[in-house]
Image (cartoon, rainbow, N blue to C red; front, side, top):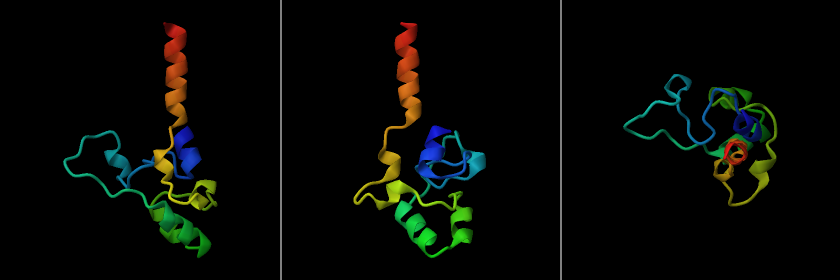
Length: 91
């Protein structure tokens, strides 16, 4: 959930690729196309809400889109931090 909020996408979408929602969590033989956040930024600037909705992107300006030479899915996800914290408390 934190990842979806951070990337401005619907909670049932992959932040890295454009996989169909019914295929999330399944092993596939061929990889899906990588999300192109630069395209979402352009669609937002052009008010192309239909294009954003097709890819499950919320109609909001994502601050990560303005960082040059940066791919938002490369960020460490908040879930990892929670898992590390939980793991260190259990040990």
